[in-house]
Amino acid sequence: GAGVSQSPSNKVTEKGKDVELRCDPISGHTALYWYRQSLGQGLEFLIYFQGNSAPDKSGLPSDRFSAERTGGSVSTLTIQRTQQEDSAVYLCASSLRGQGGHEQYFGPGTRLTVT
Amino acid sequence: KQEVTQIPAALSVPEGENLVLNCSFTDSAIYNLQWFRQDPGKGLTSLLLIQSSQREQTSGRLNASLDKSSGRSTLYIAASQPGDSATYLCAANYGGSQGNLIFGKGTKLSVKP
Image 1 (cartoon, rainbow over the protein chains, first blue to last red):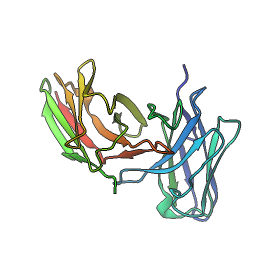
Image 2 (spheres, each protein chain N blue to C red):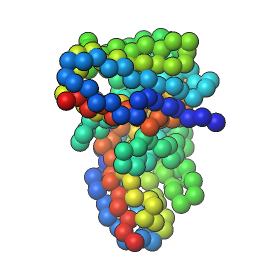
Image 3 (tube, rainbow over the protein chains, first blue to last red):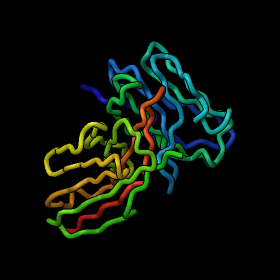
């Protein structure tokens, strides 16, 4: 079956512009995660959705970051007024459910470059 | 603070060698531990998932072990091949309300032909 897909695969934007990153999880997976991988850094957890709800947004690095999920499926991560430090690979993962420690499956990522 | 550490950061071996990658975690109350492979410019491929009640999992030439009491996991790769060259990441899942993964920084493996 289809895995997790993300678009775009690469995005170059000018500082100050807004960007939207999209994640399409595996069909039937109710849990969706966003992570960020910066150059030389480990993977950093950003936000989790169970269905359409994100119970804890404290992992988002600033209020310029927001995310939503509609229909229990596709999610978008929006970064407003991008800064150079936002340059990173943004990875999305999905699992059957959030609780219960189910295996997480990752998409190919979106490489964001802010110039 | 829950942290995951991987040693070494990089490893180079000749083809055919058996090798062990190490992962340690500070909080032994993990729900499970997952090993991933990441090729340059690519996403993460899940290799093995070990639940907290298990001691090891095997898939082909890969064997992952888990010792909760010592806070350690190892990934054993038998008869390494150049195609095994990649970065290997371990990630701890502490369950809870979100079930997010806490990642180590990875071990970059290079297998020389």
